[in-house]
Length: 59
Image (cartoon, rainbow, N blue to C red):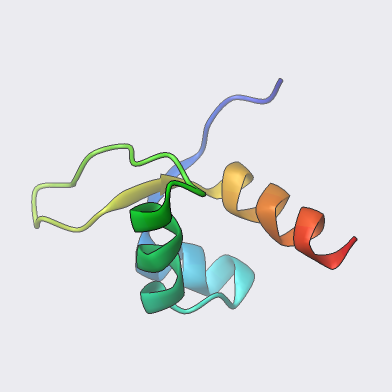
């Protein structure tokens, strides 16, 4: 298992192309693990988990 790479939703979008709104829906539905919020109040996710979900959807 890889080490989590915790990023905010905008950084996740920059890396994967998935819009922050879509990532929020995935968080709300339990498809992604919520890793808290940063000092600015932005939701944090594991970038590896987002990429894994994209790969699973494509299969």
